[in-house]
Image (cartoon, rainbow, N blue to C red; front, side, top):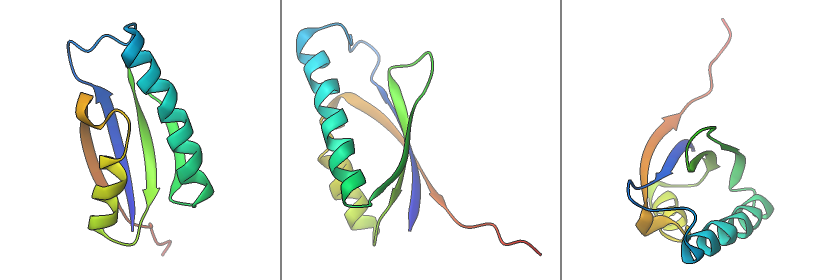
Length: 90
C-alpha cells in the first residue's frame, strides 16, 4: 500500500530555533533508515514551506501510523495523507 504524506511544521513553530533545527536534522537520518528498509520510496522538500512530501510503501494502515508516529517532527507537524493506487493503461 502506497501513501503520499504531505507534512508541514505547524504555524508558530520556528525552524530557526535550535531544538527544531536538531529535530529537522534527525528527520534526515530517519528518512535514510526508512529508505534502507524500502519503506520510503521517494521524498521531496516542498519549496517555500517547512515541510515535505513522502511516498511510503507499507503493509497496513497500522504500519503507516507507526512510521509517522516515529517521525522526529510528529508532534510539531500537520499531515495530509493520501492513499495511492497504480494507474492501469488501457
